[in-house]
Structures are given as C-alpha cells and as structure tokens.
Amino acid sequence: MPLIMLKDDEVALDTPLPWNLLDAEGTVLFRESSVIDNPALLAQLLKLGLYRCVPLSAEADKPEPAAPEVQTCSMAQIQLAPGDPVQLQSLHGHSTERYQVRMIGVHAPVSLMVTAPTLHGRLVFIKEGQQFLVRGFVGKDAVAYRTRVLKSQLTPYPYLHLAYPETVQSMRIRSSARVTVNLVASTVAPCGPGAARIVDLSLGGARMLSRSPIADKDDEIKVSFRINPSGLDVYLTLRGRVRAVQRQEEGTAEFVATGVEFHSLSEQERLYLTNMVYQNLLKDTV
Image (cartoon, rainbow, N blue to C red; front, side, top):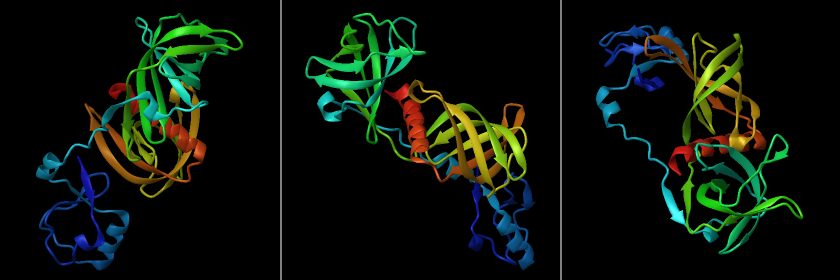
C-alpha cells in the first residue's frame, strides 16, 4: 500500500480529516472525517510521522521512470584510455563467464589491446575467434560492444588483440538510478543486530525486506552486504539513516520494508556502488 508522508501544515486542528490518517506501518490512526482537537497529541503524532494512502487515480497516472536511453556511437567518441578497467563476458556457447581486464591501447581501426584475463590467479585459455561482450564506464556513461579475439599473445606479457568495433552502445546513467537486486544483508541499529534482504539499490540508498522490524524511522543504521562489481567480490559496510518503515505483503507472507538513505560514503565505497548499479543496468539493456 503506497503511502504519502504528510507535512505539518497538511493536518489541521478542529477540522474534519479529508482522508484516513495512518502511521508508517499503514495502521489507521484516525478515519476520514474525524477531528483532532488536542494540539499536544497532534504535535506528537507529526513528530512520529503521519501518512495517508496514495489516491488510486494518482497511482494510475504516475508516469513510469524514464529508462536510460541507449545511443550508438563510435569507439573514437567514447575515449577509453589505457589503464581503464573493462569487463569481458564470454559469448561462447552457454558460457557466461566474466573477466576483469584493463585497456592497454587502441590501434584504430584494427584492434583494441587488453590484458589477458585471469581466474584465481591463473591465466584463462582464450581461443582466437572467441566472441566477447565488452562493458566499461567512461565518466557517467556505461558502454558496451561486441568483439572477437584476433590474437592471444604471451610475450612480452600476456595480452589480447580484440577486433576494433564498428559501433559502441552508450548509456548515460542518472545518479538516482535504482536497480532490482537480491542481496543478503546484516544490520546494526539501536535496537540491536538484524538480518534483511536488499531488494532495491541505488547510489543513495537501499530498500530492504525483513520478517521483523530491524530499526525505527530516523534511526542511524549500519548495513553490511556483499556485491560483485565487474567480477570483484567486495564486502561493504555502509552507514545510513532509516527514512521509512512500512508493512508489505509478498504473496501470503508479510514483511517489513525499511528504506535507508546512505551517508558518509568513502570514494571507494561510492565507486563500488556505482559499478554495481551500472553493471545491473547494463545487464539487460546493452
């Protein structure tokens, strides 16, 4: 049940309510047409947070978030530089292996040179002619293109020559972009440790589902979870503030949905989150 948090001036004393008045969990506190005549009570309720349901018409008319626009450009336009990390995803048969490599250089319009992929510290055997989907990031743009291996070299060090792509797909990522995920998380809040499942993630925060409440609105919270941006296993512990706590049903089960806004992110944490969000947006779009 979508809820709208009310501002102080939207609930008046001694005036019939135009809608049901609810708490953050969706429980009806005062029904439509009820009158609140106690100033102290109203002040306390506003401090705790008062809500009303989103009108059905407003929900139906709510525009869908604009999907990131994919554009086609040339390799020269995206300006990947030596040292930039890119990801190779195998397109061979049913294999979906992903390898993190780095750009070495470009010899337009013949080939791109990248470091040879490794797995568990060992070189991966790559056949000439093997096809890959290459993904990378340039500024706020996520890019992807298909290519094949022209030559696998072992001297003077292991590297690959990839076919120079005729076109590249580029997608501008908004800072508010959110992705659907399914990440196991542990939490630490004033009420103690807890466990939840992150179902929605962005650079600014996350939405988590749990069987029981893990924190109260406005609580400071630490959220720990593991992500795998570009094939790199990373364990993050992020600080945030709880912005919303609501009851939510999934099938026959009832969960507590907790919205957290991240703050005080380090540059490294921001980089990992950015990579994770971009990677998931690219996965089904580019």
